[in-house]
Image (tube, rainbow, N blue to C red; front, side, top):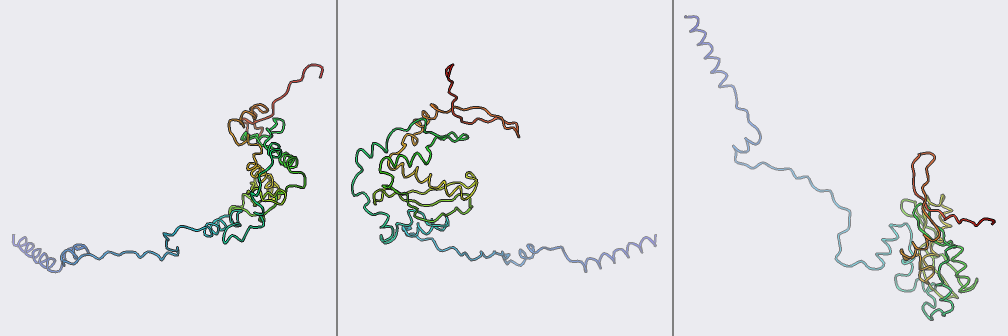
Length: 258
């Protein structure tokens, strides 16, 4: 019994020592709450911006031209004729001084012949060849009466997938129309072939201003002309084995004996 009493007394002495030496577990938030001072929050400073401040003034013509040139790595046809009015006067010489004669207008706006149509086999777009547009212009103005003049060197988009060039149509020393001729390098097969196709694209667009092949710009009439010469057929890809529909010229059945 005496031994047990001495053991309890010894344990009591150890507990008193631990109580005096120990300290309560505290956190930074609890210390701040006890001291009455708010906890400081760290705010990360934002990096300085290199962008110019936004202006409430509307962008002028020169600013739009500079922006277009920066985006497309080169000037556009509309950019060449902006500014103080001095640029581009040579191209706008005698513009709108007199209308075209009725005879010339009739030749330019003649109906499209179905036999002259070509088609994109995958997308089904019908179009006229470049030679057809040149023949129509030769018939209307004469072989030496018109010229499709390049205004800018060949440029390319930022990705390099499309090349383009600005053109103006001059008829008898008069400015008539302007357009951008562009073409996909992947579709043409090479950059040189795409540059050659730019003339065709520009001819189509300046021809639209003169009313040439206006039926092809109307979806309803264009589809009617397409269905008169072409039809859709199913083909099988020999490598993949998948089927797809393409546009092809209709097969004309010949009478017996021919």
